Length: 107
Image (tube, rainbow, N blue to C red):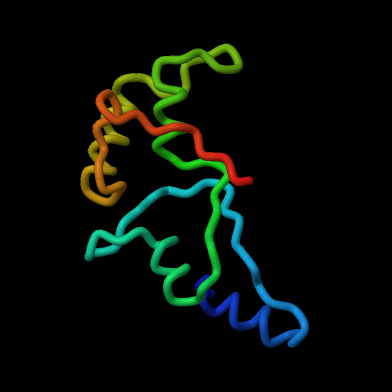
């Protein structure tokens, strides 16, 4: 079920309720074939804002070569694979060193 279908379903269950926003735990920040974020498309089409607690680029940047819970979770090899993936599917600009992503927390 897509988010648009879920919103319509929730709105139809009770006419006095209206979906006022969506909270995503981890936003992968992937783009469609036209270079648009899925969350932006959903907001434009439904009027429902999408907020994320974390986004994948921030998490990868934060964990890259950093010890957490006694181990390094994102080493150089894993980080390079992530960058390659995002160069194909991900965020509009991805130069972590020149344009580091800040941790995004929904308010």
